Image (cartoon, rainbow, N blue to C red):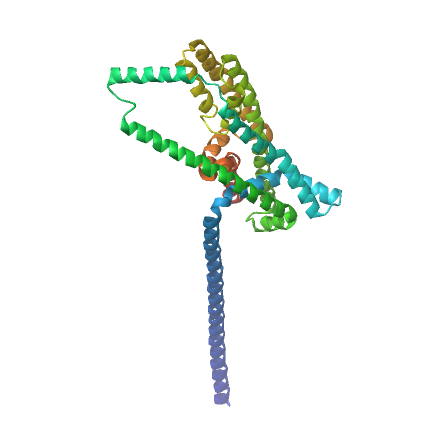
Length: 372
């Protein structure tokens, strides 16, 4: 009887050991399967991300020529989005009809005046009243003086070939810019129409894939809207004010075609650091070469004291009022933006810098401050 009881205990003990080993092996097998599934999921996830990035790079590389059209359409979309919502939600207008009306508004308020101004400037350039004979005589005297004092011939074959090369490249650049402007306009209108039609689904998709919580998503979207709106409104307003101030100075100094050079000065305001100096500095030199030293000194003082300071003050005040942007972000953002995006860099360069600092603050607030 005792032997039977001992055998029973041994059998139970062996069964417990076998049961324990079976549970361990089962757990190991389950963990291995979970690990394999996790590795498989990670493989699929990272492969999908790599494929998306690769295809995105191919698409961006192939369509980069139309980037200006996309940036322009996005800028206009931010400006007219409120009107689209008003027409479709308050006035119960169909999306297609509302989008067509807004495109007509954009064409009438932006494209038609812009093209009219460009062609007017081209026509006025042909009618510029410049005293060529006096200017040529002054330049010849300057070249002769340089050669007598230094022995350097400004009209050497090498210098003439270099000047011809620069003129050819400049002409090709102007032709490319004109043709690119037409293509950009067509792409801009085309994209803006479909952005207006599908604005809700597009915004929902963008909002859903942002890797932030709801508060940070709202902060990012508000920053984008404010920066785009402030630059899209502030830059043309600044250009108009600068052009008017420049016209007054050019007219007082006796510059030929002051309205033409005033318009060119307005366009030059988008260039960082140098800005309006691209126009008034050559005009001061022209007045000096033609012997009009009083007008040259007067225009130099007017532009250096009034035009430059008004440019800086108005630019920074507008940016601070419209988007509360630090002046350094505006200056360095425009420099960065023009290099990356071209003309539209005056809007998206400051936005790029502002978004960088905003994301740094989000990272600091969400992770570093929480850990501390």
